[in-house]
Length: 188
Image (tube, rainbow, N blue to C red):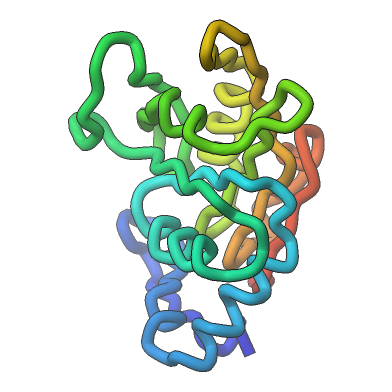
């Protein structure tokens, strides 16, 4: 059901890229509802990291489901997150198109629930290709220390969840070294 819903665009946004369009998931209420339910089955962390920008659309509904998600942390492009002091964190990521940067606020992670001194975070994104975005986010989060009320907490990535995975690009291999990987749809 999910694979048949996707659309593909050759040579977009540049030559040699086969773009996977996940927006058709939002054009069918039944498919969207099942997709959110499927994502919810794999989330074990109360906090989810949502990379710019399509992941926002699929992470926010988890807050209203019964899967245990209580906090969604946006990872945005430069200049999109208001902040104060050293709250804003920068991550360099390597996408299939080239290098890029994403930003997040430590206070957004701290707004979640910590268990046993750790903020567990699931990374949810639209498409797993080479895994560069998810790996960059995971490494930054796993190295992060957050102070809340004078106590220091660590952050741990508990799982990666993708709406679709391009099986031939082997992004899964690099991410499985960090945490389990779940993909709803597979593209050969």
